[in-house]
Length: 418
Image 1 (tube, rainbow, N blue to C red):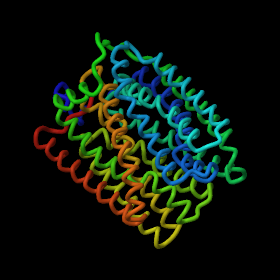
Image 2: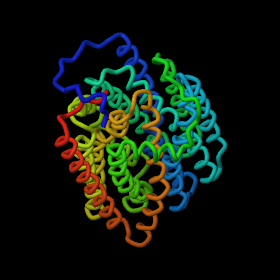
Image 3: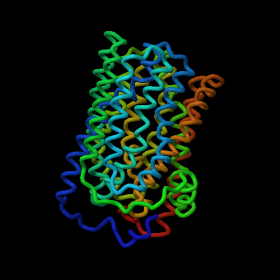
């Protein structure tokens, strides 16, 4: 844990918001709205578009799902270059250009492979955007309200994701080939979101003289900071269980439950994000009062019921599938916050982006294996047992977070993140 913050207490009185916090929040909310619009459409519909409009096979759907998460693997390579920079404005503008150009290419795709390639390139700059966002928030938001302010941004993200996801699903039910216009449009919005993030003023960081070797640097940080390793280990188990059913869920909704574009966007878009809009600020405020292990344990324990209810929907029908995505929304309200902010708790000063890049890289590693295991599990065990395997891993990750949270509390009083 962060030794330099040991003197801080969660019970200190909060200071009024400073001007830099207000300005950061304004641009952060703008970024969240634009990025959320794109994320909502792609997260809820990209595999369904590939399956229905382009005739993708289950294996191709699995690869498409993996491409989104494998793009995060790039973060470990971007991190080295980012450590050489005084600020991240130039890289964010590059990320914006890549997102706009890659989605513009979707207009011309005629095969699942070309669609997968375009989506992968669009997601690639996440290895820049997410670490840069972490650095900005760590510098510009006071630790006593960072989670609360991020919660506001998360609400905006999910509101725009919900609206755009449902609108896109409704349009695709009219003509599914309209995805050629929808994807470039939301890709442009995502690019403008990265530009807005680049406009946030941040203090210059002290650059590294040399670019460290990416994987040896990651191992060095894990050895130096065993609490961060334990946090990532537990998150890896959660992520493996969650990504295990990533390519399975859209196939289940389309092939088993026979859902239309609009029904899928209602489930994976509207219902999957509904509670996050309302409760994210409150959940963010709760996040500020606990160490990341404790908070993640509660969030992951809730999320573990998502595959359980999906399992039940296989016997009951669509109504329980809708209920499953409400449960997912409840669990992801906390999981999204700790996924984005948890690494800040462990990072040394000016290394916030590096720690988040490692966090993203770990996501990429499990993104390489978990969906393949999900496809194998689906092939040999079927939908129901695959959902149960996912639930078991999520509950186990929650339990490990709980144990590590107790250990942290025994070692010291609750420590506020910087």
